Image 1 (cartoon, one colour):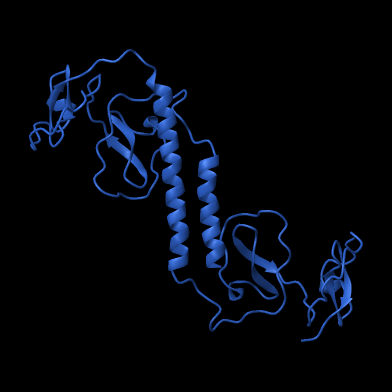
Image 2: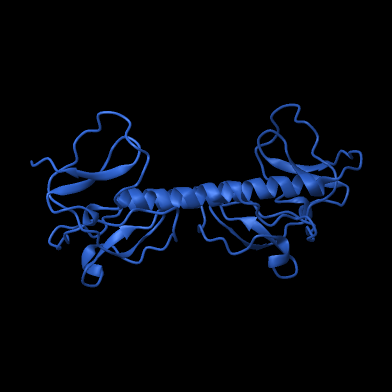
Length: 254
């Protein structure tokens, strides 16, 4: 079950990569910059765009998830290239500490106000949207992947001391819901077992299983389904693969 739960969260993580998250297209990308990340924050995803936040705030990374943060003033232009190590002192803490034509730039060791280099007008919104979208997908994938790892480390209720009911779960017909509505057969009513739905777990009516095992297929048989389970066969037979379809065969004891 741990492996199943890990697979659930891992697949949810993959879906965040494949699915199209809300982007800045058609939405207002607010001016300003997110504050620097100070260590890993909470892994909650409380916003998906700047419009999810109140005035003066942006949807920013917390180091693991995303949350609304007060914007940091950013002056236009870019910092000049460093020419060597400067003084190891912090003369500014952001562009707001500098005059409008300056930016708070690294001098190779500390930070100080420097005249910004003006670039040709560009259209950063689309690239910023792409970067934000890709970053958020990566963060979401990491969140679900870590949740999957936790299901391996955390001890889930096992069958030890619990009754494993006779019978077999019905075959899985495509991916089902990803809800985990049971953790053992005892969680289910009489005549039911805790079975995989293809993504999660749910209580299902048991399928009759006759004792013994199926003989090894000796070749490709008829591609016809002559039985749907052991209940379709006589007590000394099982519903077995013939190499292509299924038919009742005498069970091998032991």
